[in-house]
Image (cartoon, rainbow, N blue to C red):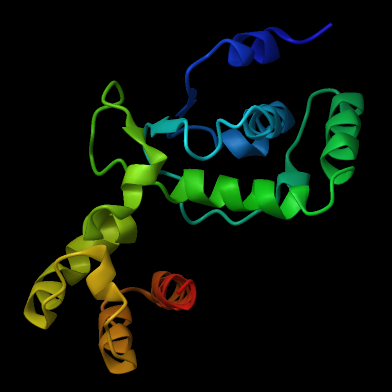
Length: 182
């Protein structure tokens, strides 16, 4: 028999992630299981909607670290996850994207598609990072996410220096990964 979540997801039009500020969703193994099925049914990433506060953007843990009240549940879900080569890394990447998705102060009922996150510079960088860099980005002439690919190393370093140490490192890494995609 399939769980109620799996049955509901099979008949759904989209996969909704509702984050909260009290609990990291991805610290629970059943949420990891939900992502696995959402991916299996082709909801991730194109039919995924995300809302709620982005309180856990700095968290960097693997889906393998997720807990469960019942150790047997965790064992079964992890076994299933590891049965497919590359699945763990893929789920970890989705978790990172879901955590990093910035709803830019949008109230919880106003859901945005995860694909939209890269349409604005603020959405790509995140609200807190963008607010620190906004004036410098305007001075440099960055108006679109694609403009970020044109930044010189010294521009990236100057922008990263505006941030605290760890967010600055994350910004450099994100920019490096973004530029390397092409």
